[in-house]
Image: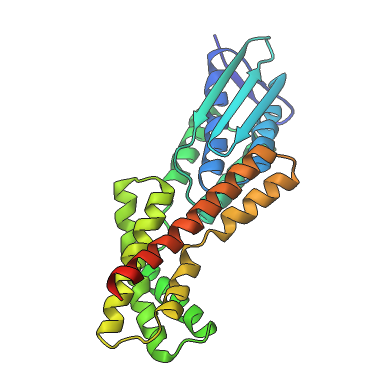
Length: 264
């Protein structure tokens, strides 16, 4: 019978249950990558969990959209798993939960059923409710417009446009369009709403109102993650992340410019 033996001194994995544990480990690495963790963190987490569960050897290769892990069990059996990560979205709360689970499993390895249950719990975590997110978007966009020199009228228009940005983002989530296309559409829709607000007399300066909303759209964390990957010698993942951030910024700029040219 295949089994996972878990005690305070040593964990030994073998047979079919080892495949379940390996599947849990790479699933946790996949979640870290999907929700914004850097490549080195993903690889380190997979390796440490593999060691904690008694695998004889663990090798993990991670790039921006893919994670591959190879495990050698204590009985000599080996297997490899790969996960393709098609959608990356920043969620610091889920990253925190993933880190908490990995540390708990390294301190005292969990059985496969408990591990899988806690993985499902991470996926079920919910962030702020919609009205709270709308309030965050409004306050952030309005304050950034004031920071860049806008008037109170501009700040009010930026706050309303921030709600439009949140709603357009929710719409794109349902559509599941590629990131740079999503960025262009969102920027264009927000640009149109700003033009409408100015024509209604609720704002004065298109550029300053736009800046308040652009600051919500620019992926600063994605850029910094790519830089950290390059510093950690993960050049391929770092360059891919940097290129993605640059293309996303260009799509955002093009969306706002297109709206201004068409409706101003």
